[in-house]
Image 1: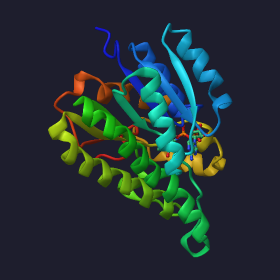
Image 2: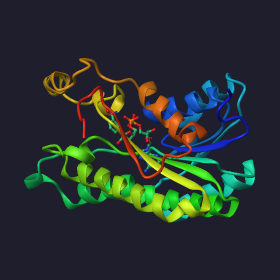
Image 3: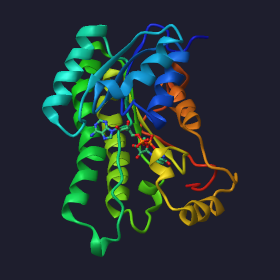
Length: 248
Ligand SMILES: NC(=O)c1ccc[n+]([C@@H]2O[C@H](COP(=O)([O-])OP(=O)(O)OC[C@H]3O[C@@H](n4cnc5c(N)ncnc54)[C@H](O)[C@@H]3O)[C@@H](O)[C@H]2O)c1
């Protein structure tokens, strides 16, 4: 079964890491991809991988925290593809630091991109999905949004916000046949986690029952499930992809 044949997926932060893996996984399942990131040329590698699968790829420059850019890019995607069936809110950043030293600027930057960005993209795409009376939204949260982490008060708050936002939107849009779910990755090997010190990485590994870090594709597989009809009766849920690190 080709799960997403004839569907268009808009993915934010699609240039690398988990976003790129999601673009490739959804394309493997038959989707055409509208990839968004801060600069269009950053999307070249994702474009090549999606096009190698025989699927259409268009790239769009968009800062998810900027309402004007989000509105313009989403309308352009809708014009180019004629429909948006899947939205994956993946773009995200960290600016870690202990609370006592966390600047207001670092708080605002993380909340603006991770939480407000998810709101702006969902509002802009949700408008089209409600009109077409169908669609699926998958928000990339984090296990830190469920359990918290010292040094990540801004990030944890933003991802907890994404989870509550997802649950609220799921209830609001269900009547229009639009589903919304969240994925909460644990420790996934990407540029974001490569930046962590060796001893922090080792401490994280000790907390993972499956004794290995996750790969971007592990997250992408669950996104595919939530984006497709395989999860047709699933909305407002959070699925952790964390090697068993968080079980509630
Ligand atoms: N890597 C992990 O272990 C992990 C764990 C839990 C959750 N996550 C979440 O998964 C998502 C992807 O993480 P990743 O590890 O692939 O990160 P990454 O840093 O490798 O990639 C993030 C992508 O988002 C883009 N981006 C950043 N700010 C943006 C903005 N304002 N507008 C548009 N695009 C922007 C970046 O250019 C980049 O391409 C994030 O939401 C992150 O919080 C990652």
